[in-house]
Image (tube, rainbow, N blue to C red):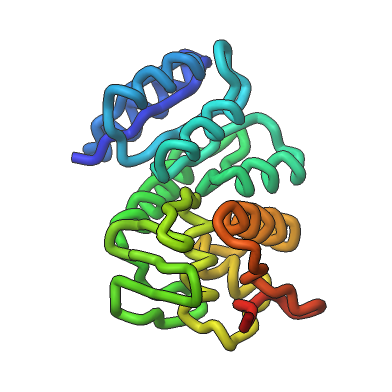
Length: 234
């Protein structure tokens, strides 16, 4: 049974989500503050996190940041904040999905099912029908990706990437001579269309570059102006 942590300080909303997902045969745990969520995540393993942003103790952004420093558990943000910049920023921080309150419980159930299904798939084909190499190891210059262990090494040093960062780098390294548009990259990394593509992709590419630079002075990801990105043939 898949375990879901519901982090929501509104008792009524928390109970509503808990009851609905319980009926779908998920094992749900309820937390009512950011601090409680972080404590539970230290001692228990979950398959999915449903996260409000406006929380006591530690807000949702802080919780998300801490989570992404530790692991790649799928995160669905459910928040009353409906500004586009907030959605883009939270997705860029590593959230897998964003739902604005008020929401229909059936929509949340559907998104939970999709998010969990994605996490079960071992890097299958994306909507744009790009087929990646079946091998578990992809190497390009100083960088090696181990898809089986979800691990990236640069000159032998392990770097920590979010799920979307990992998939972006995996895509670019599998086809190092190909230029991918931002939409193609988003389709592969998120497996859905989102209106905030440009800023989201730029932030993730910047994050990947920064993490790679900790162990190499080479600029591996090349910007092809007006089109997208590709691996730089250094």
